[in-house]
Length: 260
Image (cartoon, rainbow, N blue to C red; front, side, top):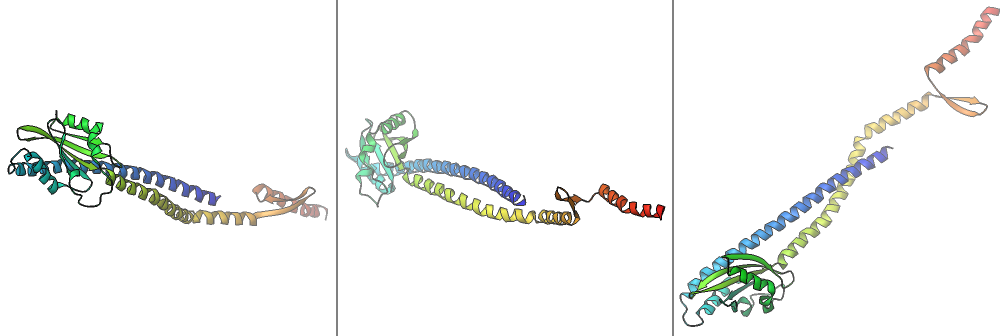
C-alpha cells in the first residue's frame, strides 16, 4: 500500500511540475516571439531613417536625370545587410533602384529574386504607403516571407517610396531552436523530478512504514491459535476473551473446594 502511495505522490508531483513547466515554456516562447517582432519593426524603421539621411546627403551632390537613382544606389551600398532588401519606387510605383541589383555582400541563407516586387502584398503595401507617412506589413516570398516597412521619401520635387524588407527566415530558425530546446528539456526535467520525488516520498513515508511494520509485528504476537472441528482459527485477545478464560480456569477450583 505504501508503495502505491509513493507512486501516486510521485505522479501527482510530476503532473503539477509538468503543468507549470509547460505554462512557463508557452509564456516564454510567445513573449520572446513578441520581443523579436518589436525589435524587427524598430530596426526596419531605424534603417529606413538612416537610409533617407544618407540619400538626401548624396542627392545634394548629384545632378542630371539619374540623380535619384545614383543617390539611392550609394545609400544602399552603405546600408545594405544580408537578408535585407531595399527598394526605391518612383511616383508611378515602378522600381527605381533596388539592392538586388547590387553585388552580394556574402552568402545568403535564401534566394531572393525581383519577383518579390510584383507580388500583390508588396503592391498593396506600396499603395498604402502613398496615403500614410509609414506602414508595416508582411510580404510573402523566400522561405518564410518578409517583414516590410514602407514610407514616403520626397526627392526632386516628387514623392518617392522607400521600402525596406527583412527576411523572417532567421527569426523562424531561432524560434524553432527555442521550441526544440523546450521539447527535450521539459521531459528530462520531469524525469529527474520524478526520480527525486519518488525518493523524497519514500523518505517522508519512512516513519509511517516503520509504524505499520511495528503494528503488524505486535498484532502477530497477540494472536492466539485455537483448534475447532472446522479447523484451526485464531482468536484475537480482547477483554471478553480474557474473562472467559479466567472463568474456565476458576470453575474446577471452585468445584474441588465444595466437594473436597
